[in-house]
Length: 137
Image (cartoon, rainbow, N blue to C red; front, side):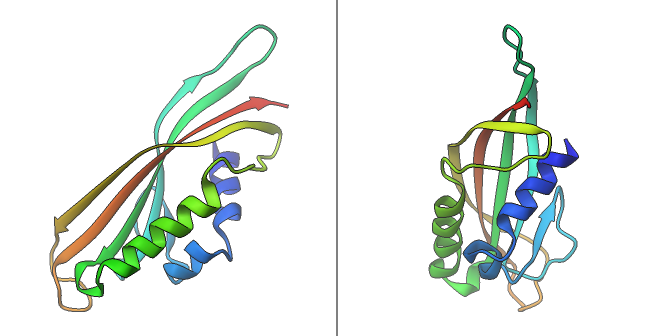
């Protein structure tokens, strides 16, 4: 599983979405409340074994966070740049072959948090799910 996490981080590195969040890209949980930021984590992982092939079907969630006070442009730009980078992309996974990387679902939320660094307490939160299917090379 770590090779998948590493491949995703490498894919995000030095891209528009990476720059949108100021390099604040985290696996599983954010290390800071500074906004904007992106967190990616596994929702589910199901074996995808057929005939002589072994693999995994992973539902990966990408959470985009922006201070509500930053306005809609920040979060919508992050969302656009994430889709541009990841929709039906080719992912290089060490020792594996990526068969599919497909967006499945997007949910938009507004969350009430404790005070953020900019003094506000509302977060815009987009959660974007991708199905990633890969097989052992």
